[in-house]
Length: 117
Image 1 (spheres, rainbow, N blue to C red):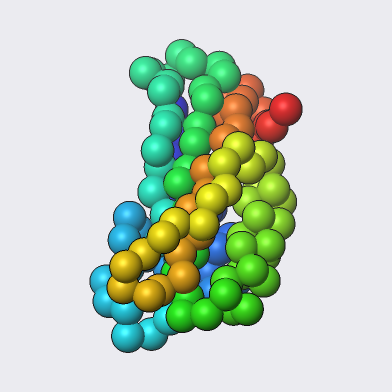
Image 2 (spheres, rainbow, N blue to C red; image 1 turned 120 degrees about the horizontal axis):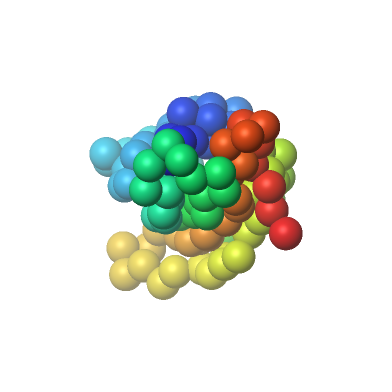
């Protein structure tokens, strides 16, 4: 098992400097992106191939701001070797624009790379 959170955070910080683990600390400075490791099923250091998944949420005030950020996050995560397996706008009664995405890949412990199908 390998924690890919630092690489993911660096990649999405290039898209938006306000990046939070799991949930934004506040909504005063939008846009913001939150992320968390939602699936890393490697049990020990003997696992050669480990399925990995990250949940990434984009938060903005307007739809025109949301779409370019979603596209840029998708490109950043694909650049790391992930594939997007889910993307859905989330209705938010607060009025914020919120898009939720899931990215998956397989970490290869032999060469230290992430692969997607």
